[in-house]
Length: 87
Image (cartoon, helix red, strand yellow):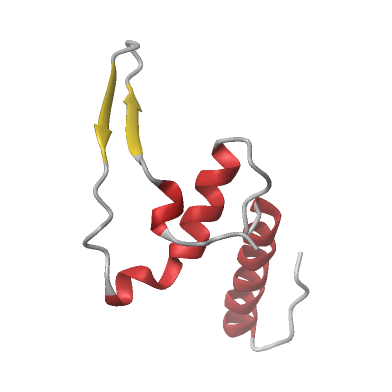
């Protein structure tokens, strides 16, 4: 079973690269993440693994695109007062 916790990401490092090619790397301390902040830890871990080439993220980009399409249809429906197709 895959572990979805912050400890599975250790060590975690944030890399930022500018258009000029300057790169900075800073360690990220996730030990103080608690309470409501932990709501999406599984997603963060999944995406970090995907970036490292260790599988697909969950949720996927396709999941996000479908969710956005549903939201857009809901907005259109609220404006038109009719049922709208999810595109």
